[in-house]
Length: 143
Image 1 (spheres, one colour):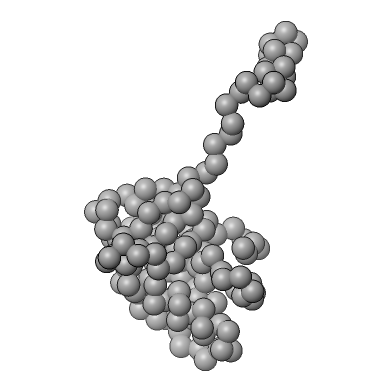
Image 2: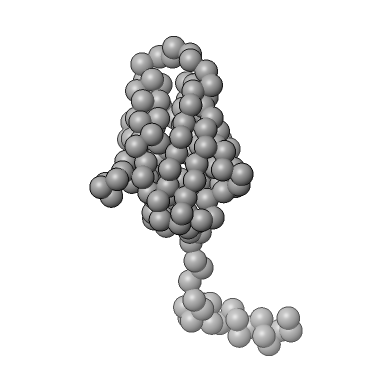
């Protein structure tokens, strides 16, 4: 980039003439494979180990509720989302972790569809009611 082009770009940026950067968007259901999500925790929750779920491209899933690990399968037709979860471990954890586990696992088990909301993914029940909000999982971060 020459000096003139750089100066014009800098001027346009300063004047607000360049389009705003786009925020990352949650994938459409058909592109859910290969993504990893964590539960958006309720205000005041401990963020020691947020519940997470990984949707593999082969239709399997793995996750951690913050207390127990699980596996299973998932499938979508682009509109509906079916999750079949099974426990891998059966640890008895502290109440606050078990409360999160029950909320997270219960929402996964009742999921009938999902919709993107910015970079988040909202799991919905058969009537279209929000069950759970997921956000992209990033190591070492909680919301």
